[in-house]
Amino acid sequence: MKANWIFLFWGALDLLYVGRFSYVSYSQGKIPIYTDVQSFIQLAAEHGGLSGLIFALYLLLNMSMLISAVLLLCRHRVAPCLVYIQTPLRLLLAVPSLSFIPLLVQGMEVRSVDLIAGLVIFSEVIKVSSVLFRGKLERWRIIFNK
Image 1 (tube, helix red, strand yellow):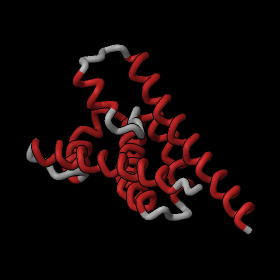
Image 2 (image 1 turned 135 degrees about the vertical axis):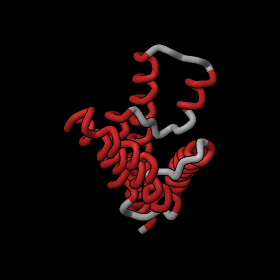
Image 3 (image 1 turned 120 degrees about the vertical axis):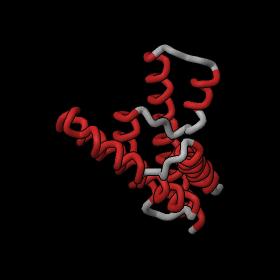
Image 4 (image 1 turned 180 degrees about the vertical axis):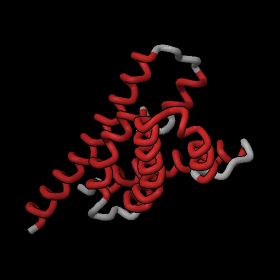
């Protein structure tokens, strides 16, 4: 049994996030990432050092999202490592792997921080579990096909 669909699913969702992020920026007359950096530079002095760290993590996560989409869609062996590295950043910055969650939350006008946090945590548990599960399936397939 092959479990490549798991990587394809998560890669497609990362690609959806990148596409939505880019679309929202362009529709507001902005250049993705570049405009964010410009805005942060203008406001950095007012917000202090912690905001700089959070912004750096935001940039790291957003730039790694395109890389993870490509690695997952290509079913590259390094993809799970990037998934595990991104997970704490996604939790900290409330960027769910189920990238349609923000659309649902916005469309349903959900205001509960607890519910939104729960959905983000649920999203990450599902992603990490499925990637781990895929790895176990692949190992079992190798063992029993020999």
